Amino acid sequence: MKQTALTKTHEALGAKMVPFAGYNMPVSYEGVNIEHETVRKAVGVFDVSHMGEFLIEGPKALELIQKVSTNDASKLTVGKAQYSCMPNETGGIVDDLIIYRIKEETYLLVVNAANIEKDWNHISKYNEAIGAEMRNISDDYSLLAIQGPKAVEAMQSLTSVDLSAIKFYNFVVGDFAGVEHVIISATGYTGSGGFEIYCKNSEVKQVWDKVLEAGADFGIKPIGLAARDTLRLEMGYCLYGNDIDDTTSPFEAGLGWITKFTKAFVNSENLSIEKTTGSKRKLVAFQMEERGIPRAGYPILDADGKQIGKVTSGTMSPSLSKGIGLGYVVKENAALDSKVFIQIRINKVPATIVKLPFYKNT
Image (cartoon, rainbow, N blue to C red; front, side, top):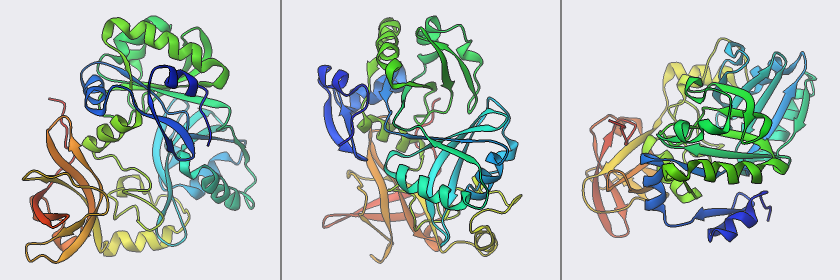
């Protein structure tokens, strides 16, 4: 099992460690509800160094990225990032990812930890005919996510960069916590603001310590992966391996907005047909109407008790104190405000299909 550069730090803080995507990762410190609330109301810091990073460089870099991703990376200027996904040849998704344009001919691809090898092989296969320069720097870099409404105020003393000026899905390369040339990026996964810090493994302990020191007066706490999951689910953000995978199309998953037919990409002809004809099923969000916690794999039923789909992600929402979830259902049952039932053991618990996000910061 792989370790991040901060594994011993988490253990010293008393974190509960679990295997996740081949890494030994902190799932919680004080408990998911406390950590969740810390991010929603103040500021928390996550170690997400298990994520993968690829550099795609040279005059052919954009051509390769355009071939393997659904979004239009030609729209990216230096300092901007873009959410995208990599389609496979059979209509599903290899992975979802964030693409950063670091320099004119240098792009950083941030991919999911469990898919690093799969993604690298997939991109490499298409690069044989294109010839871009590729480097897998996943093992050399660390990633911290500093999230919450007080993140900017709490961290401003650590950098000469104006953190409040970094717009959503933009980034700056600058100084942070005494380290030069780190990426400070506003591409959060929690819905509560904040930013991410990319730095070398040799630098991350210094950054982590200074982040906790600077955030002390603002109530900062280290946050584990369990709260990261409840936070992202309250926003309705997809998690690879749960809500999207090699069998789910971007259109089924509600990712048509990142699927641009302004260029040709892997399987774009078939996906274009699917856009026109429509998908047979759809990823929907639902909220439980009675007590019950939906879990991945639970059947979704119609009023007659017929199975119309299944849950892909579910939890008890710490912010709403209600069961919430995502799941695929046949398109006939996917309309907003539709009544469905989640089978929890022998019980059929009523739920309503709702509009995302579950959590609205009002």
